[in-house]
Image (tube, rainbow, N blue to C red; front, side, top):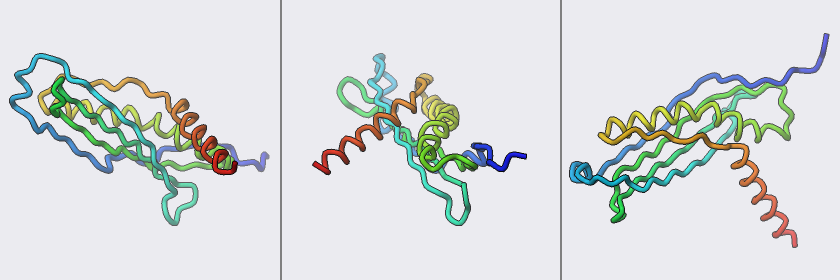
Length: 154
């Protein structure tokens, strides 16, 4: 028998934690025939679930801001799609990577579907969010943090 615990990640629950949808300039905005400029921002937050070993809540926060050429709001969607994940046997130094790369990759299809549904139900064409490279975001985020820490030391 092997005494080492095999590393594992399991998804325990996925849910919408917070959702806001606005289309303040309807119905007049529907009369425009030009595609809006869409800005998408992504953030990842995570923390251990209190009083439970190995459980973490991961929140994928996506903001979609669509404006017309006059900078008038077409629609705004702010979504926090969350999940509770159980991490077992993952080395301490790799936990942040799992929480900021693997878990958001699991959450993204659910968040993408929720945003698309609300935009479509708001009367706008389908909005398909492209795949997101969470590994690159992780490296960018933590590479910048390391540079900032190094700059503070000097």
